Length: 146
Image (tube, rainbow, N blue to C red; front, side):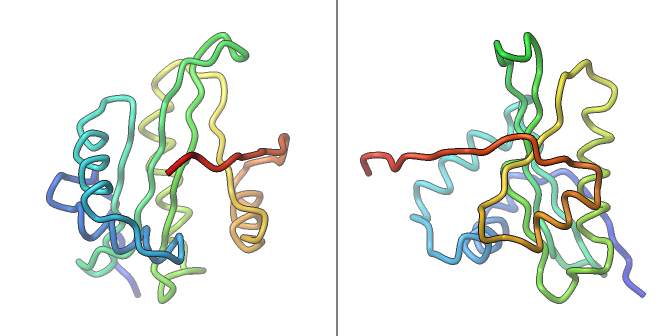
């Protein structure tokens, strides 16, 4: 049996989150750029960063950003990243993380709670659909200049 605790991420969690997101992205991110971005975002009230600890060990991360969007005429919350250590996938940790974020946004007025997931992440798509999300859009991206 796992003891799962979901807590707000702190500045000191930067390299735990870094390692998780490198695993999620399947690439090594520039550590200095990552650290600067994390430090800026972790204290931004529009951004929710949460860590899942399983039996006291950091085992998951979720981020959710709030935006004021004209096409909603209001607030949209979007999960930007979500990572669960492979050892704990399928054991309810992800569901608890999404519920924890939802409990943070539920008292606010918002128009939509959404998530974007890469085309190849079919297991993630099934997870989100099993947790109340519905596919309503297609997202197109264009690489930046760096």
